Image (cartoon, rainbow, N blue to C red):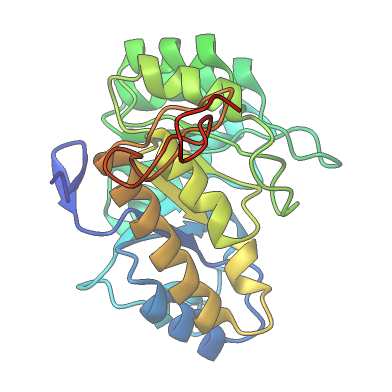
Length: 268
């Protein structure tokens, strides 16, 4: 069984990534991360107060030896802002990994495809390992792979909406064509959403709001871990084909007359 997720040559056992936003407390954040079993954690560098060295940020509450910190460019409305934030993130974390988000629309929080492609080109040329967040746009996903992105991260539905997987058909095509890991990011509301996209063949999911805002974040983190694991196993096992009609699960041979005959052999 293919148990390892590989991104830019680095192996991970968990296929669930989590975020650090919207948690009600540091305790909720830490307990949910622990319960989720995740190994990659995203942090919005641009939303941290880095001006006061004495003020603790979320980075001070994460074990850097245990987790891979994935800075993101959340809050960037343009490609230029995303590039600046990525370079700041590299200074702060010492890592070349960056999740690119370019979101000019503050109502629906939908990513800008043109700005995303532009930012990714610049950052790849600058030596970054780029993981771009995108709409479930098949052609954009192809182009991002072509320029050297380490993953593509299509949304299931708008950020934080909890609407689940509204882009299933497009995600299936992206998975079919992908030569890099496909990470479904945004909109997942419950573990069954994660399980569904993993069953389709997604390589991983990224979940933030659904865990952070749950009544019991730690329990929801565990539930998402199990949902991701179940979906991955189902994908590897190979599901049965869908049929337009019923198919008996028990063979009829040797168990008495066929349903269309009486015991005497007379046709009904």
